[in-house]
Amino acid sequence: MSKSLPLQLVEDKTAEQSGLRRFVGELWTAQQRQMHSLHYVVSYRASFKPELPDFCIQRYSEKGAIVLDPFCGRGTTALQANLLGRVALASDVNPLAVKLATAKTSPVGLDEIVLRLNEIDFCRPVDMSGFTDRLSAFYHPATYCELINLRSQIKHRYDRINRFIELLAISRLHGHSPGFFSVYSFPQISIPPERQRMINLKRHQEPEFRAVAPRIIRKAAQALRDGFSSEFFAVSSANAAQTADARALQWIGADTVDLVVTSPPFLDKVDYLMDNWLEFWFAGIDQREFQSRLVMCRSLDEWSVFIRDVLHEMLRVLKPRSYAVVEVGEVENAGQTIFLDEVVARAAEAVSTPSKRFIVEEVLVNQQSFTKLANCFNVDNNQKGTNTNRLVVLKSVARKAARRTKSG
Ligand SMILES: C[S@@+](CC[C@H](N)C(=O)[O-])C[C@H]1O[C@@H](n2cnc3c(N)ncnc32)[C@H](O)[C@@H]1O
Image (cartoon, rainbow, N blue to C red; front, side, top):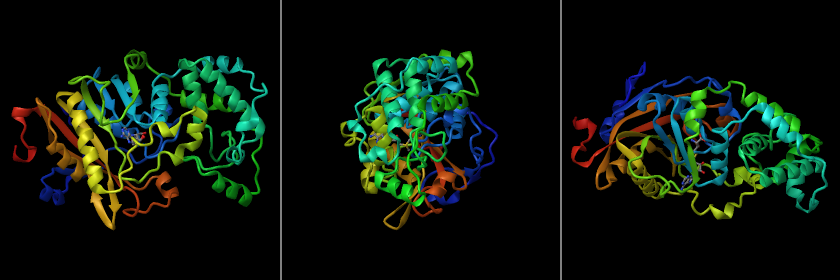
């Protein structure tokens, strides 16, 4: 069931050739930071605005529904699902993403955070052999010492409170303002140490001591500002999350999911490994364990096969007559603009299970101006990045009844 939300959409006739019903409009506000404060607790590459899952969840599901994101990133769909009274299933091949999504959907109270931090002896001497040149480009030795003490405490007792503290600490690892643990650095990605040293030289700066606990507490107060309803805790207690490849979701049974809202990696546009190296270091994640499964396709053919395998798994786990919304953009590849919605639609029509197949209901295109983040990566419209969100809306139907929407 899809609900009609008040929308001003214009049909894009250029899509008719490829047999798609494509509508363009402003599906949500272009303004920044309009949703729940917890959404903005931590940066993550290529995350979508919370308005996107908010729109899809309200349009394509009911309260109590089970909503899956198999490329969960920082848990945007999962958190918005819980805020809207739906249960969230989240997975990603990157264990960092699963940590972020799990912690974000299990928030704790500010008082619990303060009490737990008070238990830590941040000045306890630590083994400094790990304080290599890479880390000394970012942190003062005394900050490093505090971070190691915090990390040991988190590892020693990995409960809900410490998972949330870990999320807050990860959000403070590098950035512009004195609210971060590092010297002035790049906020959205972990830059390479050589680049950080160049920034230090240019700005005549050296890492000074940044006490860890007060910065975590300040961030917690900001992230928890908007509060949570009892409904949020009721639904989120039924959540599940797993580190998994989206092409192999064995942890989810067939015909169990009411809605998928997700955004797969687009070709090889983002390097999720290099861009998160400080986060992996703090969280103790060994990237060699999953990097071969982290998809960065060089060619469109490779990506088409990947997306077909992903859609096959989505179809298997979806209940009949349920929706999957796959968000993609357009990308520049070998000097050509490629509209990935068309690739997803073609792949969806090629997959089936013994009892179900997909029909392509519609493509909704949110037209937007470039974000602040895209601008700071020097991405120009239609050059290296994406300038629209393209929502490919797929419906799972019983195989007998499956027919293209275009023909009725
Ligand atoms: C576009 S991002 C998703 C961002 C997310 N929507 C958010 O708001 O944070 C794509 C994600 O796909 C993950 N990924 C890459 N290859 C994968 C695979 N084979 N299976 C599952 N996840 C994968 C990456 O780790 C990344 O988190």
